[in-house]
Image (cartoon, protein in one colour):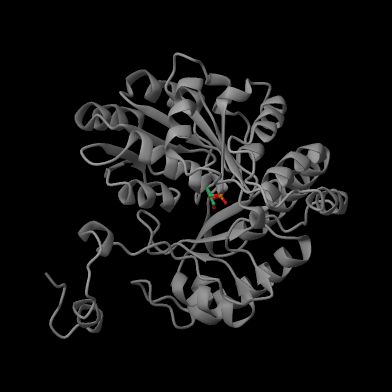
Length: 386
Ligand SMILES: Cc1ncc(COP(=O)(O)O)c(C=O)c1O
């Protein structure tokens, strides 16, 4: 069977492919975060500050001692123990992975799959539904209110109707920056028939953590990553904390020796530099408040954030035009305007003070330049729009 679509170049290209992917995979778009070469890169919520030099030096010293002939520790026990100490839990409650994305994948392979469903609340981190789909799970989309908070009453009905095997809650939510209330998570836990996952990739920025709700009798787990607050996106390291019965199942599913020896050392050493990590967060919070206040003086709608990024929506200009203007002026942010529930929205990651200053300066110019040719379903003059 071929996929040919008359007159469609993609369809014709697919038609010449000798073996077709699974139909649901072939129909997918894949994950797109453009890696455009700009000097000011504020598009993927990375840390603008490098990890401490002392960490880099200690890592180089320890890497020199690795016996590369041998496979690494398959269960990464030392790393699990150090993470467990950091969070004051048992190391049997920790599952470590190549970025929290791999933890999400392991979770979906273990508890999702054909005949099962996964509930997400859009707008949220796109990989939850993307990975759920690749695992063969059906994706159910729950609703949020106009503040982007999960609508608990609606969630209860959706859960009762679909009985999802996994429920993803992102808090602080990417890309809105909103922290979900504890009562919301508890209300969902009360009715969830399967696993509830709280993705806390930006957890250190938040006012509370769902880790305090972890309990052996609860099907709750929490995701964390080294990619953001630990300034180690290049290391690809993340982890999940949950009850031991859940972790034991993940260990059966994940590939043997998936965590290389360098990564295991990098993760252990990083934890020695927690004060530096906290200080990076403090600097970013100061920057966040400064950028939020500067944005509120511009013709954009801004959402409050408890993360290292801010969601905003130009009042009268097309987000696509603003994004392109910024790229043309060497500033890369995230264009979310085609994401569910985020019409005409953009997301900016907080960078250094200099990067944020450059972003604000170029944004102001972009709003001036693009609103002159505004095309967001309304005709705005420059004076009306800025
Ligand atoms: C909410 C959320 N979860 C998970 C991830 C994945 O992070 P990583 O795989 O780098 O640990 C991201 C990355 O942007 C994210 O925003």
